[in-house]
Length: 215
Image 1 (cartoon, rainbow, N blue to C red):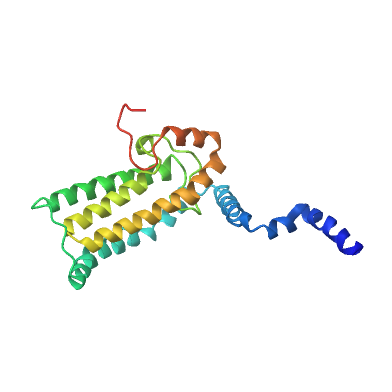
Image 2 (cartoon, rainbow, N blue to C red):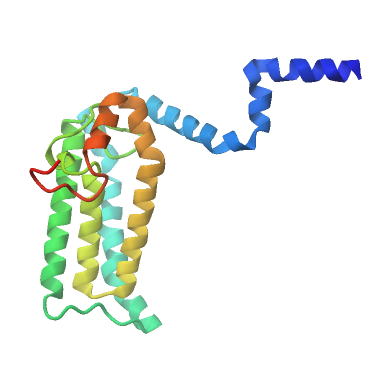
């Protein structure tokens, strides 16, 4: 018994309390988040050349400009027919509204990527993040304009194709992106840019743009 008592007293002090932390299940998600954020900070420690930044983005092109549009506007209508889903109908303006949303969405997304490549000296990819906090251009109106533009573009495609299944695909994709931004990227940005990001976060909407002139 004395030996067990001494071990219980010494144990929690071993390795700076690591034993206690390992036994505390409530610290699990926090520890994982800290590890993930530290990993992002290590990735951001290296600034890559413009050529490497562009090369890193090239594989994403076929996915975001080819595969996802094919799933939404090409496969979506087929799924509708297979599942007997009613098409989205807003009269003869489907293609007009869809085309406007797609064009606007891609314009916002590409402008955001261009700023990340040039002014931010990074990419949208977590392994090659921006070196500077972007707060101008489309980033002035919401904190995640690239995500906003992407969602609008794909939603426009779904509306133009009048596909219910495609619209549900877009909404599911949007939910996944927004969850990632909230759960991981915001913590990573706060870790790297500190009070500058926190102030920007307080003043700028998450995804729904602020109207010009409003604060």
